[in-house]
Image (tube, rainbow, N blue to C red; front, side, top):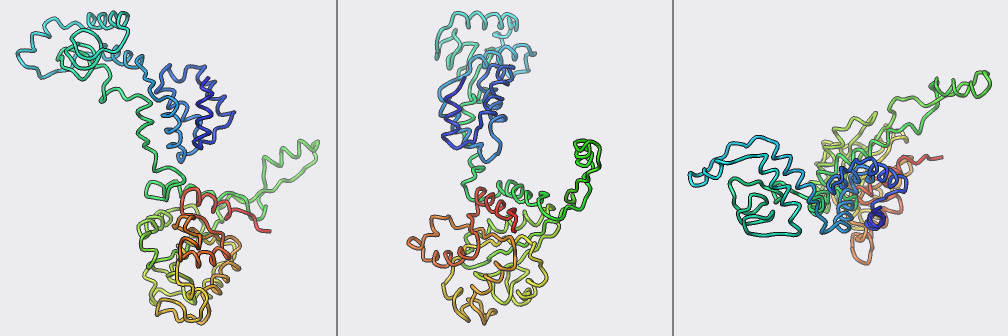
Length: 401
């Protein structure tokens, strides 16, 4: 059933497994879609889509596969359900008031059922058949003050039309991060707090009981890592200059991360283009907020996860020359690459997030890509998108031997 829909989901990039597909078939067999396309739309999405980043791809596949299919049974059920209710108060003219003298809900229900049995196609206009326009008491888009609205834009939105709206385009993982994506991004960062590191110094009672039973009653102690959150993160962000087009993006990311409570410790630092002798605790990057980079390396142990956000686009001299720093406050006595190399060597886990799309990292297309290439030789670089952030998180979680 719907095998081609399975392949359409695969084609547009929704990672559907056979296990999930069989779960959907089981749910359909239990009648959980309620024999409607709209019910199937929401049921299939809840079973098959594991991340909101694939909502838009799911809508695209649904629209492609079910395009043109409507669910008139739903409309009839809605109409019959509506007829069970009391007639709401209406503002009508004296000319139309006489049409309500013989209003009978039960009679109207019987007439609707009879016309459904005899009508075999669409009908537009007129005063009898179920359709659009005209003065028939059943349908929409026409005029009958004593009629019943069936379908129409305001009350009947098919699942195909819902999918066609593509309301989840902003959740796509290949789009640049925006306001709606930051919550998703933080969930990716939260993965860093998983218990995959540290000493196993806490007794695992359940594991000990299980191991002892398996060992014929001979005591076997099982140890696990502490549940305490020991994850520490340092975030360094490039400010000003070529980063100006990404100011809003980085400001929102900074605010969202700053409110997070997922880490034991979280440090923020700022720089302009490159890190030199000083780094800053304020985006203004002035001497008032300067911190010696050597002091930072002494105070932050190598277990901190270092995340650097910047476009890595600058004059090559800023990386390769003494005194090449663009800011007057930084009369660097060593090239920028030397300081970046110190950061890369000090921290065991470090990534660079770049808001510039990867296609512009090619030196043949973008002059700034010369320095991007130099930085990429020191740091694993990922694009500042949901996919890029997910890959960066996996890199930060990798165990270093």
